[in-house]
Length: 501
Image (cartoon, rainbow, N blue to C red; front, side):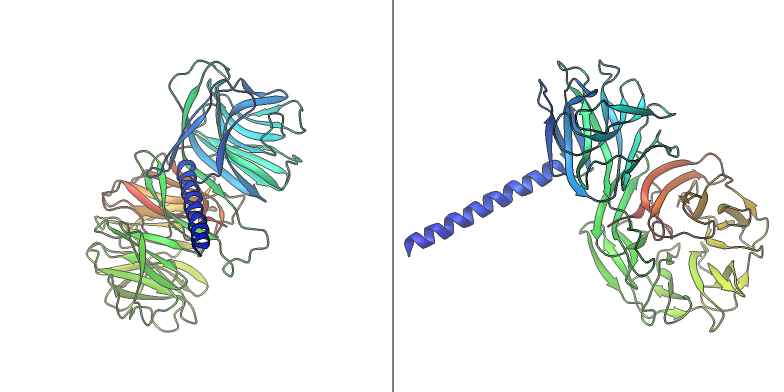
């Protein structure tokens, strides 16, 4: 009996030790499975992971990643099927070699002569897509038209690999390699190479993501991918994931005390405590099928919500703490999607479908007759007041592509604010009234009047009066990413949802 107890105790002790090692390994490598020096290197590479900022600090050596064999430091994860890799990467220090390298890599094995492809930024700024088609074969290269990229993305779709790169703030520029067979299960990750066997180099990687995109068989609005709620620091453009779920989470509102978010999922609204990282459901009866059009009043006391309760979306108001929802939409008028409160709390603006047209309307927050503010043919959506109450920003397809527009609070003086070659949706004015953030879809991926789930999208920011826009987040998302106002009360952060399977 004593021997059995000793054996059980020993097994339990082994389990605890192995489990602690696994936890330590996971915490030290973040989202990756492991790290290794590939090929012959003189100086062992290393990784330090900052869990608070979700950043990776790498140090590594290696003679080169080129010709018929490679030597470098690699932080990797094994994965099958299609994927999207993305990071912001930067060397630390001036360095020595012009062709020191950092970037993203997909590799068939960890052998030095393995087939691979990598999206790489060199020390001198050269940005390129490098690949080896056969084991021990010669490395080939496609150079990007831009240099010194800060943002790097590498996507696999079957045997097609696409590199998308940008200087931080700009839109992506792409290069592609087709018919590259690396096998279904591959090593993917981040890497560093000093290009000098006697030296080591250092680099920082943030916004590191491994995304598994929607399969071609996914049925929109019937099947969903998992969701991550992210908080973007506008000063650093570093984004941290604060909550993940296999369910569809959508449209985080930042509450006025700065301590919580409100989002929708599976027809319910949830309050998410930013300190405890725990959600609690809000009572919105009789609204039981809430969608992602919900907005807080300027005083933070009330919510305007939208719910598809067995028919077209209906607008309601409800206390921010939850309670009985009061219906605003008249019976039989068509769908209503709530988007913005006036600063004085008297009106709510919404997108309404009336007579097969989607236009911007306003309605008294206490109930009453709705008033149509836009009349141009085509979709007008996403209306939102400025903090001073003078203007309403919205998005409209009337000029061809979906663009950001502005009008006075009474609907007069409607004017186009953005005019580019993309589809721009859901303008949100910062609480300090200085900036607008909005989401951009690529015109070759979506129709102007559509904002679907699971696409390559960009969150962009521009001055409230118009002017140059800059990208502040590169992500895989779309519907539900920022349908609602998502600025922090201090105008320094944006909450949004990204997606992965």
